[in-house]
Amino acid sequence: MDKTDFRKKCIEKLKRYNQVNHYKIDKIVLNLLDKEIKKRQVKVLMLYIPLKIEININPLIKKLRKEKKTLLVPFMEGESFSLVKYRLPVNIKKFGVKEPNYSNKYNKQIDLAIVPIIGTDNTLRRVGFGKGFYDRFFEHNRDKINTVLFIGRKYCVSKSMITNSYDVRGDFYITSKKFFLKKN
Image 1 (tube, helix red, strand yellow):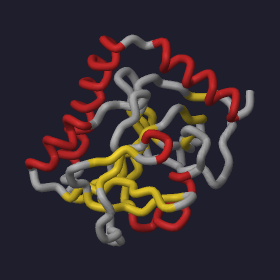
Image 2: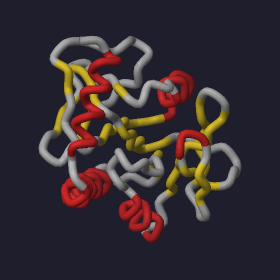
Image 3: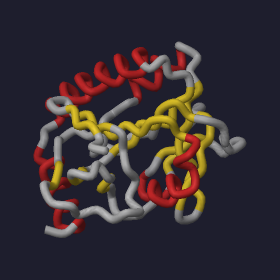
Image 4: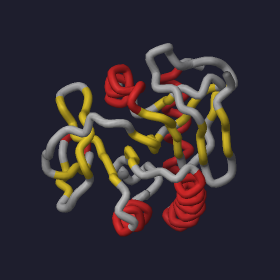
């Protein structure tokens, strides 16, 4: 199976989940994320504003804002994105992606990047929606990010290597039922 077929298979699995399961699964993953953030004493986080198929991290964003953490989210720029501080209001842009109004780019060190994924393979490289935005961003910014944490609603891992060397590599992957660490 190639990456395109694997992506389709994983998306189909995600679409079969019903809304009740989404809430329950998201809550489990958010609790795991919160524990990881506290354990690592994270102060600066790269997050995302979720699409319907992704873990809804909005409750976590609200909690972290109250804790005065620095929260950064993607701001689309052509074929990639830059990071800007999360602030309200958010607007719906291309591909249904929500983002805040443009503000200064953030170019300092990031403690933890929380990245949504559709699936991965045994190299822990990201399979996303196939547009390459995260790949292009990480190509130029990986050295500024201490840890990359993938999250997903459904554990979807290919036994064979299907990703490319340019695909974003995570340090670990969390779903509601599995925890997958990067193999060195």
